[in-house]
Image 1 (tube, rainbow over the protein chains, first blue to last red):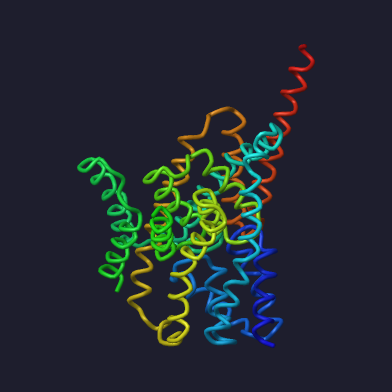
Image 2: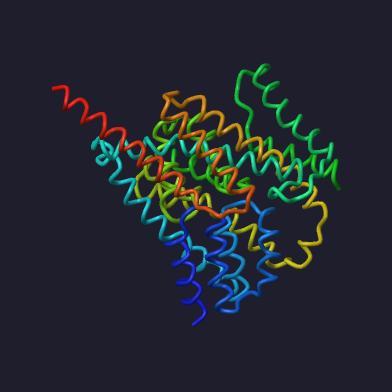
Length: 189
Length: 188
């Protein structure tokens, strides 16, 4: 029964994928290859295409593979499956957190995690930045540089600053994404 | 009314959630902490830390929590459905035209622009966190070690889960709390 198989496979992925999108990708990759739902090459191709689709990688993969194997119902079941475990876990945590935070030890643990979060996020920005601006994926990849990326970066930095000066409000990041897409088309297409 | 407003916000964020979990975190922070003040910065940071150390997509975990905080289980459901719906629809439509979609050079050109914006959004989210962080010796060290360690691991193709960094930081926080407590106890 393909529908059940899809639902439970992605339920498992949702329940065990710790550590963000790429952990998710390798876990999904294992199950998908094991069932023969995709070949390794298709999987790699998809990982490339997936990045231009908004939304968490897990949801995108569940929708795509679910559709491929079981049409609309397959897509729906796979997506619900991948989201359900974390939904339940977060509900439980959300219900308990205020009581738990009263324990100083729990509080010390959770607030202790916070500085590393900023470090992780900045590291993501730095490594993504190296890839986007210099084509650097790891220490051995050759450097490449394109002046057009700097033009777009300048726009993306200048617009929110100018807006804040003039209107005294934060510029919408969503609008900024739209602007950067337009400049991408103008400069790279 | 607040539910409808939240649903629309979540739809909007889901539709523009390019560039993975941390980019979505930046959008959620802007919408719910800066713009609407439905959750304060401290609590938001706690939730992101918890979301990162529990299974599942981090952005969905944070959305579920915000929904729960506003309107209980129903709110959590509305938020989760809202943030997932755009990618479901977009991915579904792309699946229908998959072969042709991959050949669209205009999509790729737009995406090159978006990537740059995403780097900017993630970096400014991180810098905002750094600015609001209490600059104690421990916090600064944990921040710097995580940043340096994670960047080096990525550049040297050494695959390591971000959870290891987060948990270690939690353990450091807990131990310094316990040590302080012991010291205070000794003084008495």
